[in-house]
Image (cartoon, rainbow, N blue to C red):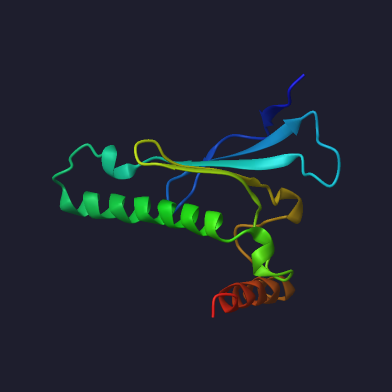
Length: 141
């Protein structure tokens, strides 16, 4: 039978973009080295869903969020995971779609097994995060 996806928890909204994010488990699990967890992220087109399009401040905020989602899509489709080098790990993009009416949809590898934490404490973890960020930015110099 074809594989199916089971949510590992409830959907969450991201703070900045307002995207809906849901982690899914592939059933039955794939054979190694493929990962059984993926993240589905969807960002609607905010400028198409404004209650009052004449409200300039809300329009500007919606445009900022829409452009952020499109920029993320553009980045993930332009740079394959392997192009950034071994020290810079970003989720592998398994599917990406940018639809002018429906928004941006991404299906990516999940890093849940990497113990992501929302606030990085001082110490080794912070140093590692800053080192990753420096390597990431240096890739584009």
